[in-house]
Image (cartoon, rainbow, N blue to C red; front, side, top):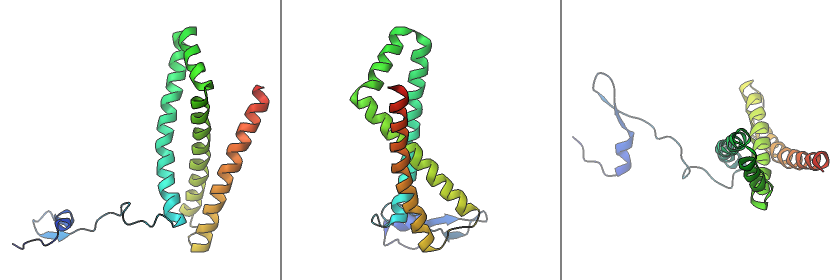
Length: 148
């Protein structure tokens, strides 16, 4: 039995079904990524916007339950959604929705085998970022015109 010199080695040791030991690789984590690299930042942002969708779903459920509960509950939700905090949240959810959607289209292109080279990866990443800003602003401009 060997004595481990580094505590991290314990997470890499595994056993096959026959009982023999093997070393398994560690999965990458935030300490491995270079945060200034565009591809890493976009990957992490995609996960964050996916989690933000969960928060947005909670707001949608709150709104639907309030609409079914009656006028006073619905008025409370409408008051919150029209407050500066609610509008900021809705604006952020719009940005998260567009980013997650556009980055999803980018991943579909990768699944089809396109855009794996580094220049194409950076170009499509910049397109996702610019598209997110443009589509978020366009969505809110159109919404402001329609609801005004």
